Amino acid sequence: MLRKLHAWVMTLAASRHAPWALAAVSFAESSFFPVPPDIMLAPMVAKQPRRAYLFALICTVASVLGGLLGYAIGVFLEPVALGILKAFGHPDGLQEFQAQFAKWGMMVILVKGLTPIPYKLVTIACGLARFDLFTFVWASIVTRGARFFLEATVLKFWGPAILAEVEKRLALYVALGVALLVGGFLAAKLLHA
Image (cartoon, rainbow, N blue to C red; front, side):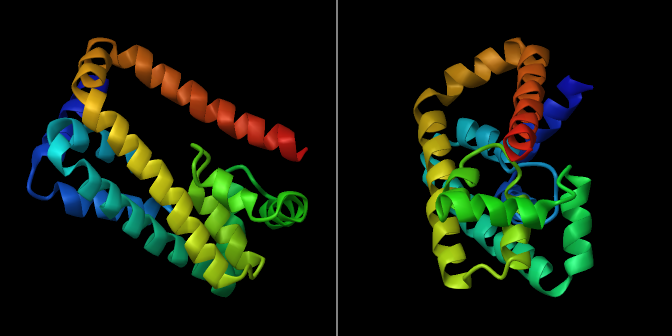
């Protein structure tokens, strides 16, 4: 099954519809969708390294626009926002964000935008907390741009070697990725306890 999913993603990454799919995944991931855009960005850059920075820009713009949707969900659809936070393991998401922001300030947005912790948790919590919209937007541009352009740069120069290694040991790297993601959630939960 992993091989079929991998083959499908690689085929989509090489198709003419890939930029639109990348934009859609990046947009949705910042507000409600559980799959990060990296699963599209990585193979797209590996297949077309000369377009690496265009793909990073698409991810950044779509992610920030999706973040605005997440923010709007927090502001205008509080029950939906609280339900999404609860579904992602943060039933006290608003209180957690407010406590983090009181302690760390703007660094909460900047750091969480770079990590594998789902960015939608930040965008929705910012809306719930009525965080300053202008500051939210520029912090999102900085943090999401840094993440996607750094990833695109690494993949542009070392992508073919990385891709060959991942294809050789796909199950191992998927297991490691899941372990890192789960570990990130557990670490975030322990830090907020």
